[in-house]
Length: 234
Image 1 (tube, one colour):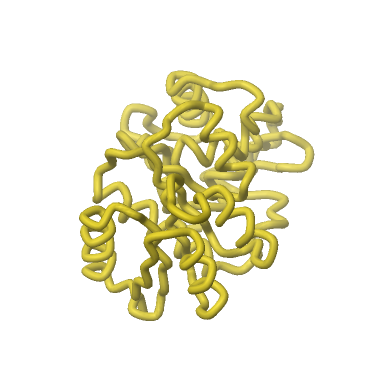
Image 2 (spheres, rainbow, N blue to C red):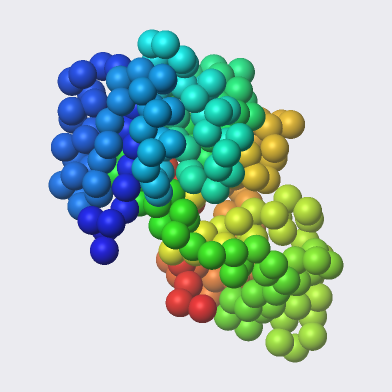
């Protein structure tokens, strides 16, 4: 199945381009490449892709402009930026241009492959979870519209807006690792920069709500170096 998934890789460093291309092809993806922004846009218009991986600093047209142009005609295809720039301003700029993820150089190839898999799977999903109104975990049901957690015995626990948004994000991406960048964009909207500890505290709270054994969680997991994951067979 993965052989049908197509990725456009845009990177002007030849050795990095070849290394990423080789690793993606070993995972079964079909990879088209470009070394400048102008060629990238030409290829994008000619083919269908499940993911675009974009370096920011490109000849001809930079990655931000490429992403902006792609978004004018396609709002669905996931875009991941690769960049040596790691300032908050650059991250915000990338997300404003329509990026779904942002990976800073130098990066671990294993992490890149993991994030690519998440984005490609998301590109293939329908919108069946977009209107998620409630979700049951164990003996408790989350009601997203009313910001409530209800036990089977009728006990109601109020949830904060941030708790509800983070729960919904993790549940919609259940069984996938969700990066801190995605959590920042979706839950905090970059108004405030929570530390890793802040997000960890939310996960600890969720464990108190849902886990029979908080020290050996079944549902809510921290993935070192990547982010967080909600696991369920719901």
